[in-house]
Image (cartoon, rainbow, N blue to C red; front, side, top):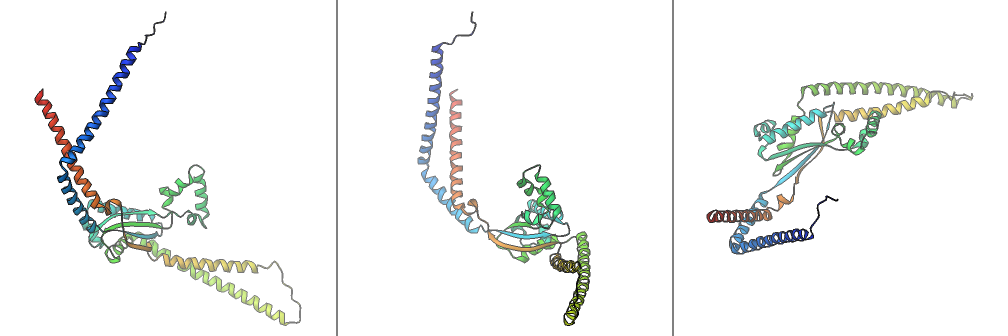
Length: 327
């Protein structure tokens, strides 16, 4: 004999009817609340109109006074100072968040209250990262075998090894080099340790340039001697044979490599005059967003929204109070 409970069709009809009634009641309550809202707006149309005018006027005033500008500096950290650079920017950011205007004044920043939101990020350039650097290429290739190349390129540990980095900070009102940029760069270049590294690095580069110049002069002497020998042999009636296995091509190739190396060394001297080298900057780019440029729209909506919330809270309080009095 089956012991499973029997389902009564009448019970199902009752359940569906009850569910349909509840849905209908819920929809009706939404309609009633919507209509109550319309009545509320009609009853308070004068107040809402006044709030709209006040909010629009106040928002227009704020829009006219709001002048936020974004400033960018492209820098390249020298002598392995990338982590030092990021820590210095992090310190400035922390002081800004703390509202420590005294610290900013000590840096030489003018109008520190108008200085805000400094950050730094690497300029992703994987091609320069691996160009002429076999070790970086092999490292990137090895890391890419176990993960997504894009994630690896954008990874914090990888990106800090890129040559150029972007410092971005914002100011209220326009700024100048003397007001913000120079104080920031001077602060970033104040390091006794890296100053010593800079001095030794420049001395080493200058020594290499001098040594290469001497080598190039010696090569030029060898080439001049060969040229003179070849010229005298052409004037002579005697036939002169030259061994094809001479290392003349290797000498010329060595000279060419040394000349390229000298060019790189001189570029190093230009880029190494500062610990944190600023290569370019852009100041006073107007920072725009919907909120910053449309306060004349946001403020009226905010005031009207607060008034509606207050009205709804007052109506709820009255209904609950009425229920308590009837109880």
